[in-house]
Image (tube, rainbow, N blue to C red; front, side, top):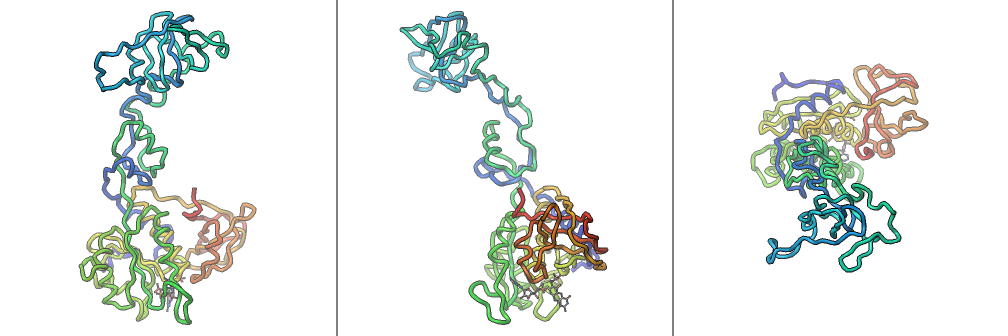
Length: 420
Ligand SMILES: Nc1nc2c(c(=O)[nH]1)N[C@H]1C(S)=C(S)[C@@H](COP(=O)(O)OP(=O)(O)OC[C@H]3O[C@@H](n4cnc5c(N)ncnc54)[C@H](O)[C@@H]3O)O[C@H]1N2
Ligand code: MOO
């Protein structure tokens, strides 16, 4: 472990910045439009041609020139149609209307040359090859450009339609298609592996004294997804140094270690302490990892680790205590994954603390709160091993080491599951 680089007992704000800065954006990849949903756009999307790219009709009806009654004209079809069958949407564009002429047009059809406007089908009557307004039409219908969607109305050719950095939603995928793109450059979601430790941890049923139910397995993959990552594989290691080293190592010592070695980030749970049952620090030393964050000046979550393994993967070491681990996710995993996605570090918000807090020398306190009358009321049940406070919280306030008075503004973090 290269101790020179390790930052011990890092200030909470500095820890977020360190984690974000460590995560350099992953290389772009090009994906089909249908696979781009939910991915981060790496480069802006430009309109490859004007949108719409031709003047079209917004109604089924007739394109007309001059005053009624209009003589209906048609595009004379070649004996053999170039596409094998008529194409009414484009055929209307092959007509040039003289004054007093009209031609049938579909919604989306190309507006003929010299057309003044479109008379919708409900407002016209045809007798033989003569078209006239009917009783439903206004006396001046159609007015100039009525029901014509002009070319370039929505975007000029070459203009930016979607900025880089957005997480692509269905409307943006549709817009990218309209802009003429078949593929998009996206930053792939960082691939995350989970390694859970703790021989006392059981993953179903009721634990006996000395056992605990696993609070991480059922929710960390979803939590990681909310932070922009994708969990490929989750596994467990026994509280045994060799097992933990094998599970973290990129060496193919068993099929699980290889699978875990394939991602960008490995998140471990538990074992960050220094008891004989805690092996994460020892394993990092044995594997020659570079420790970036060795403990954060916060409560809960003080023993949180961030390291870079020799094969380039990051390791985020979450403490075993459930609330501490969740606070470590927000403080380290969130910023790291944002950095890997090329997204900015989200600035903390501000809330007004409803309560006073005594100083806690050298530590920020991360306190789940509920919003009541525009004030942040600290949740009950928020010790490091408890979850009720966070489960009922609207956010997390970050009380500085010097404490605060009731009514003071303090920084706050949004909970990703309440965002948006
Ligand atoms: N002598 C000291 N003891 C402890 C210190 C210390 O400074 N000196 N720090 C305490 C703090 S703060 C924390 S946080 C924890 C960190 O512990 P570890 O990261 O080593 O985690 P474990 O010892 O493995 O587990 C702690 C606690 O969490 C429970 N746990 C573990 N995994 C799960 C899980 N998947 N689901 C639910 N609960 C889990 C585990 O049973 C323990 O109760 O150390 C303190 N001790
Ligand atoms: O840092 Mo530990 O997180 O308080 O329980």
